[in-house]
Image 1 (cartoon, rainbow, N blue to C red):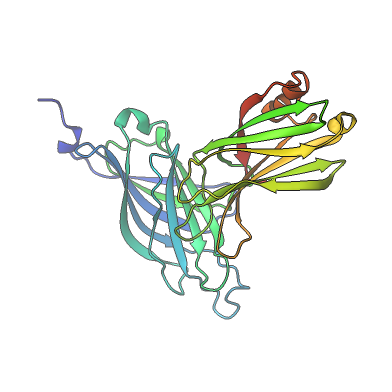
Image 2 (cartoon, rainbow, N blue to C red):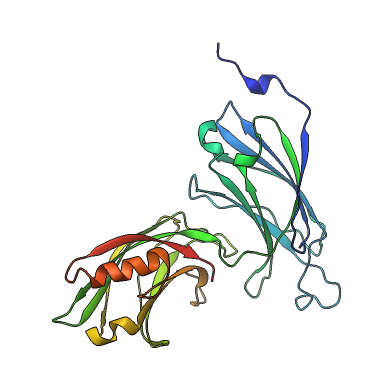
Length: 295
């Protein structure tokens, strides 16, 4: 039969993933590919020396940490997160998670570990994150890792949003069709992922109109196909931007920020190209994928 590398175990490798920035603590994990089930197995062992916001516990500086684990590009819409460990900055988990992915695709994936401080009465605070590029790790053997926890980057790619823009000069109407999103990286704590899109029309730096889509329940790849229209004269178009924000709906009604793109005449790369393509093709719908960022 076929060779089964998993039948020939070797001694675990122990890797250190260090950060040049100030560490928010350390994460201890083990990763291995299961050839029998075609899964990436993640053993979440522990975290140590977590940096806790003193304002949340001014006396002891303890938190209630838990960890959410995701894979980019995503393999399914399941939310994987650990239990909450009370009043500690050295939580021990010893919990297992698996991601269904073929061995050929593993090297194109990244594991994201987001560390949260649980709060029963307000929004859970992000303590930091670890990103593990599986293209740099040999998961065909069990790999043990100690990773520095870093503050979340403000420019991480948070998924993509497909938008269609069109402008009708005779009616002075700008139409934005929110088509769909894919691979949204949900940062909110808790078990929900109910995204919606809010679009603000910004003229000369001032938000003059705001509209939003419906909420799509329990998905990180929502489909909307909803048109939002804005009345704007053609002479103001060079001074306009569209601020497009994806949010995760919550019961309080504020929405947890997921990611944003800003489309306008002076924006870089695809954000500027999309707007200028619309201006050069009046009455035509111009569709383009836009990356979402934390900014």
